[in-house]
Length: 186
Image 1 (tube, rainbow, N blue to C red):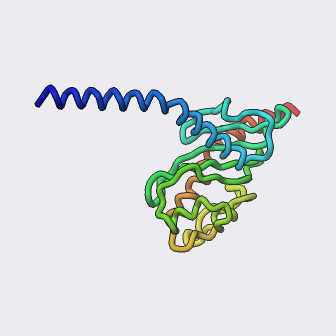
Image 2: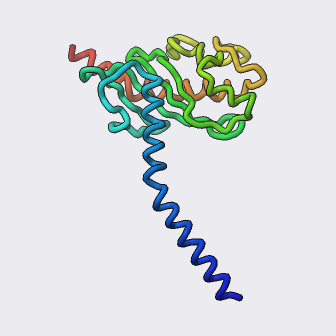
């Protein structure tokens, strides 16, 4: 009995290891493609490949989009806790710190309620475009902010806006320094 069970476990482990080895590269390629699509969605048009020069920082990842060697935008990937679990966002900023666009990379929100956050035309995503967190209160109206929450899904809206603010903090700490240095050279 022990030998039979050991043999079954060995065969299953070998099969699982083989499936992992075969699917690892396509899964990684798919993730890179998803990140590249999110970068393209949240930044102005660019001529470089931002995903090849990712900057890992505390709180997120920064992808710099350039046109002719000059930064035209920054895509910042952050993760925050939502109602159903982690909410992974890509937030695009123009060099002056205004939100260009947002993209929801992954979420675990309730279908029909919080999952609406993936819709580009939902109030929080539309209302943050063009706003600069340095001068605008990027929070839901219930919390004294300027942004409407998704109906019946205030927790997801708060998490989304928390992600936008977290991305701005990463931008402020890392990208404005680069932007100031570039402006000083002109």
